[in-house]
Image 1 (tube, one colour):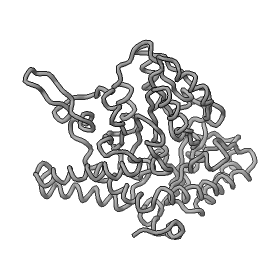
Image 2 (image 1 turned 60 degrees about the horizontal axis):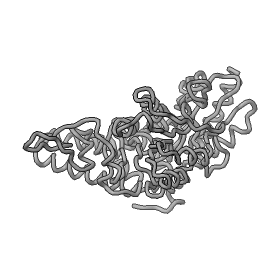
Image 3 (image 1 turned 180 degrees about the vertical axis):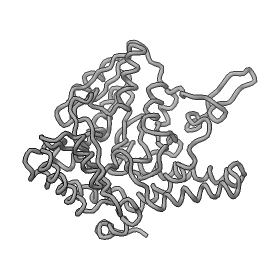
Image 4 (image 1 turned 30 degrees about the horizontal axis):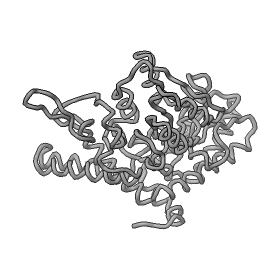
Length: 402
């Protein structure tokens, strides 16, 4: 049953019943790994019971798996605005980004533009740094301001060079929740005929993601963060026209055919990239989680999330000696709230909160571990009173340890 936005907010207690963690903890660590709703857990056990009862390699179960994969591709294609065959099942964001890094035929003269260098999540920095060390590819690390934003003209200037091959950046920054101008970068990439790869680990499921508007060739995200799916399942979007540019990392019976002359010919995408068994249990779980996300709607989720984030931010601002990182304008950020108590280390703050049943994370705010902070990443199942309780505990920690 669908509700309007106001009803969804009123139904927070019904939503919370779907997430058992809310009975015991204040969980605000969805930027790392979100809890699953009970319906997803049931879909996983249902899948396993069906395999056990009918036989995992029986025709009926194999047909069921085929229909599940088809259904999941359709749901994801609706979520990010692409074709179902442009969806490849992976294990994680990292794996999807490595499909790009390892799949392109690189030359020493090639240039990769990477936003922020060490300020990027390592999943979207190490693969490109590795290429620069391995093949001598030039890695242009775009300078950023203290919120993670950058000069678009600088990217345009480098993209104009004939050897520039790819631009890569995160849609939302993992360390402060800033939303990057991905559409504007996409216009540059398309205008200069440069490939464009996006790490969407912190955006899909919490804000609108439209690969057509972004103009990207590749986009990777996990099922187990903001989509509240099971671990070990991720998605790699590969634009149909760009799939031809990638050589798969692995090859097997599902991804290629052999000719009479014993030549190997790749099958079409997505099979081209999906050799061997997939995480079918994860696919069953993610399909269920995505139906849950669809019922709420990303627009309503965004509204609910920002309500919690704004309570946290506004109340933190009233406390002296607290530094808050990231943009003030809520249009430029997600529900990730990153801060530090000037007199207490982030590590101590996180462990002290955990002892009180509040789960958040410690993350870099300056690349390479030079500066760390506390990151809260609440989602739609969090309640406003939890936000206030969270801040009250920050005050207690500051008074006790500061």
